[in-house]
Amino acid sequence: MVVNLSLQSKVEIKSNQAVRKIVLAGNWKMHKTQVESLEFVQKFKSEIENTEEGREIVLCAPFTSLSVMSKNLHGSRIQLGAQNIHWEDKGAYTGEISGDMLTEIGISYVVVGHSERRQYFGETDQTVNLRLKSAQKHGITPILCVGETKEQRDTGATEKIIINQLKEDLIDIDQSNLVIAYEPIWAIGTGDTCESIEANRVIGVIRQQLKNKNVSIQYGGSVKPNNIDEIMTQSEIDGVLVGGASLEPASFARIANYKIS
Ligand code: PEP
Image (cartoon, rainbow, N blue to C red; front, side, top):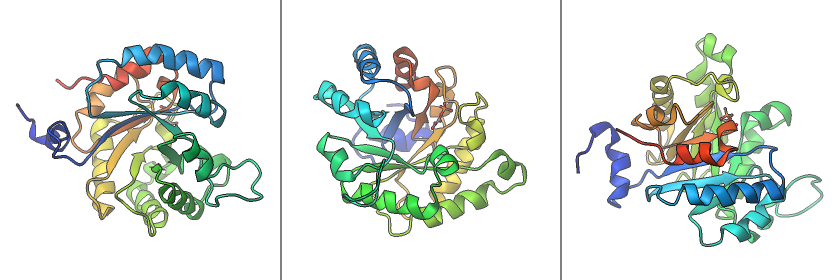
């Protein structure tokens, strides 16, 4: 096997010595009814029939679609993710969802700390930390999102902001069951992708903060079929978290089927 040194850790996955899993996750946000979700899955399944083994494909769907998708995806390689989890197992928390409710229907991943939750729904580093703990307690892998605003980037505060988020979010968190997504907020849903070399650099900074250097770290922010190949050639980037481009089966399949030349 010809191994590009910068890709070595990811290539190793194929020979099973490996550690850094490649995780390609779609975050559907508040899109798709149950019928639309099943239509997506039906088309998408056939498009990923030949996707390389070792690439974890995850669909983070709205709560209303998860149960029906779980039944439909039984036996397939597609993993299901939720978009939120509460830290209590039950109680008077209107509008929230518990780990037990998610594990009962076979959820493997959950997005935690997405910038939209932080910005619009009062999510703080403290509640992010509680949600991460809850996910892990239930055996669900949290995808922790961190990232800076445009203003923070422009004032040179990117590293400081992210290091601080990680410090607060990861208190007492088991780093052996964790995925992190570096999502610069200015790149989310804007078409303004972070240069892949810069995303790689920041992800390297994130990795330096971790006790477990083998945590899979994704890039997220306007990932599309036309930039995925370049993003995935970067040595530190172990996958992607995709919003808009995960809504169409062919588009997300092209992302899952990324090619490295
Ligand atoms: C996201 O919501 O996490 C995201 C990265 O969105 P988009 O791909 O649309 O920028």
